[in-house]
Image (tube, rainbow, N blue to C red; front, side, top):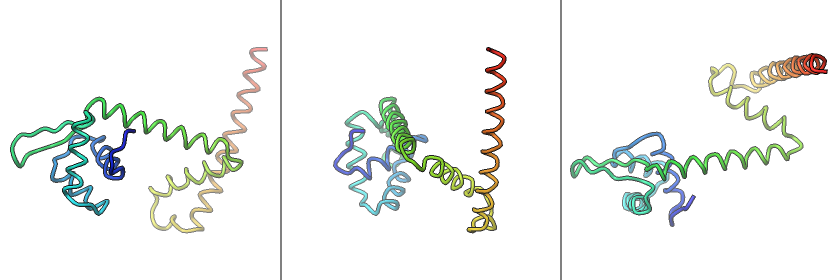
Length: 154
């Protein structure tokens, strides 16, 4: 991604706009609160993104201004998103602890949807044991299917 002189603000703006148009006031307040930057800084980066054709400014009145990603801006953020995912997966694939890392990521994701009783070390350990059992069961089923498929074809 071509980042301006204020990369944190640029990333915050573009990712916020990825999910849909935003009114200027709301967008500026969101970024100011998140990054502790000034209003002029946010508007300067927004203007830079508009000039570069990544963001479109829609002025309906002096107080009703909104911003949205252009198709070029959307394409850029999607490409960067998939490149980042690819980089993360490359690191995981090259790691000797690949399975452990993947299980931890999945556990963290699953724990987000659980109540506070599960968000303890004991709850996480129980969930991990269950998940390990499910993975082993899946591995055995896949091996059986693979063997049956090989026998059928051969």
